[in-house]
Picture 1 (cartoon, helix red, strand yellow):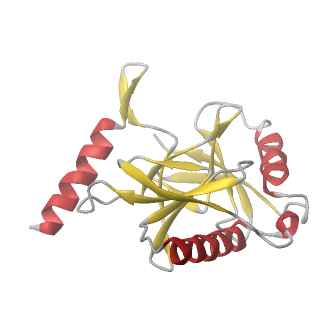
Picture 2: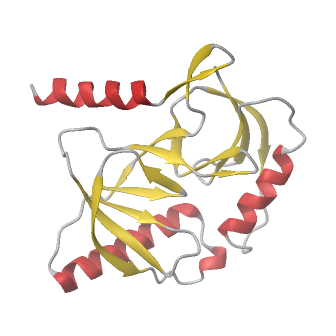
Length: 189
């Protein structure tokens, strides 16, 4: 029964995320699924689709932030959230890491029976940016890049966006930090 409710929740989320584009239905380009790290979902450059409540905010101290890759940011963020959760004696289900904000959020789901791993990723210059998450749509790789190190996550993403500009057409996105290479991709219809 629980599995059927979870599947129903996934169906509803995907159904609500369908748009009509040029008379055709298509899943939103910026829809993604995040993974669990240490049994917590981490939303980096993404906003959860599921309804949630903020349990507490925490300061995210990350040593050598400019040289940290997204995986290191995620692990440090969970550690910082766990420390704050211990200090406040509170439990949480996931964290939302806000780029540029001094405090990040620890959240709990309003409905824990749903699959709450779906997110809407941020876009830059109209391009969806997938950081430590997987696009819901399939995709083809248009370019593989190794970006300069120690410039900070935002500058690295900006470099990748700049490289993506040479690709014409719609559904072009960037995939940063989740694979060996940083990718410029085209999402499938």
